[in-house]
Amino acid sequence: MKTRDAVIKRILELCEEKYITINGLATSAGIPPSTVKSIIYGVSKNPGVVTIKMICDAFGITLAEFFNTDLFNDLEQEIE
View 1 (cartoon, rainbow, N blue to C red):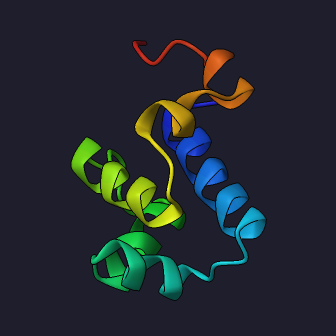
View 2 (cartoon, rainbow, N blue to C red):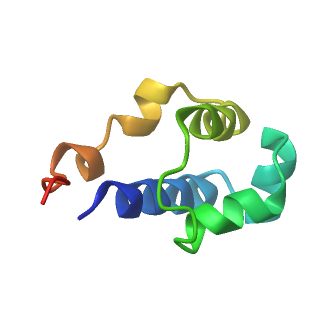
């Protein structure tokens, strides 16, 4: 799995766990819904750490908690 796919999966996983819609997440994070949707739909190939931090804040978790899952422990090599 690529890193961006793991980020997408993690965001969707947290939305489901916390019963938050994509639009609700964007509102809580203080970012445009189009930004969150561009991450989810793969338009944004490299979401910035500040954006991910804002998303984490909306979920009420730290960056460490966001990335501390098996999704990120088993990532494939990005350099080809």
